[in-house]
Length: 331
Ligand SMILES: *[C@@H]1O[C@H](CO)[C@@H](O)[C@H](O)[C@H]1NC(C)=O
Image 1 (cartoon, rainbow, N blue to C red):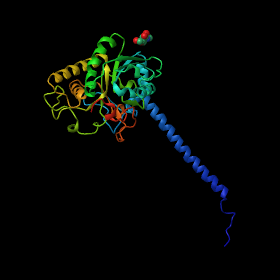
Image 2: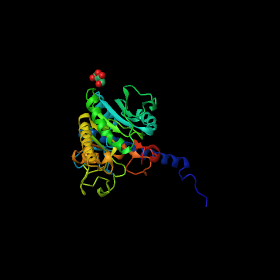
Image 3: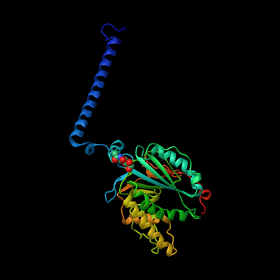
Image 4: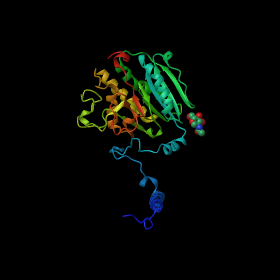
């Protein structure tokens, strides 16, 4: 049988019909999306962005039980927080210790800091070293300053680590208090910046959660558990395990921290006991009884050797993989 082509809609008509349907559907989608955007806009004007907005994380805790923020990517608005601190004309002192072969880490540390660390703010680096001649010449940005301080060489890295508290206490008392320094961060030098570390990190007393211990139960924390040490923390007590590779805060609070830790380290030395993780054990004891007002997630101190972890969306600052046997004066 032959089809009567006259009663059949032409191919052209079908295509036009399909086009119309497509345009109609597309129009509906665009229209609904626009209505939704307008609704969201009105809702945010009505309720305020931050009650209906999308800041915050559901996969990690972003506040401590004493209501201190824990800073993770996605919990702050960088542009907004920069604009708040811009009005305050602040200076951030930053101390690093580079003794012996550790001077080799300075170039990467400083160059990467100039790219990522408190960009747009006044930063004054205080660099302690036994070899001022080994300091690399790194070009610093506007309102970025570097002061080199010569200190004697020490033979044990544990002494270098523990002597830092004493030196920091004196630096704050003798110099920083007179210069108009607002905040201080004390950082390890065998590190490198890979992403923004900015004013979101500022607070009265700031601790950084150790990357190895942020998702493990407390009994694994390597606190000092011998009662003979001033760094003693009883079993079953403790909030977080903090790294000594980065800590900071206001001048006043960090002065109290360094003074207290220095005193406790001296008592331990007089009793011939050295805490299991040296300065870090004392810092953890201090933070247990003087709670930090802000905590930084392990984004602010990662390790090149660590495995990747889903919750860490950005690595801002990291220890560089190093051969301890090669750079330390002793093991
Ligand atoms: C900002 O601070 C610097 C350093 O403390 C100071 O020299 C300068 O006068 C201050 N500027 C203003 C506008 O307060």
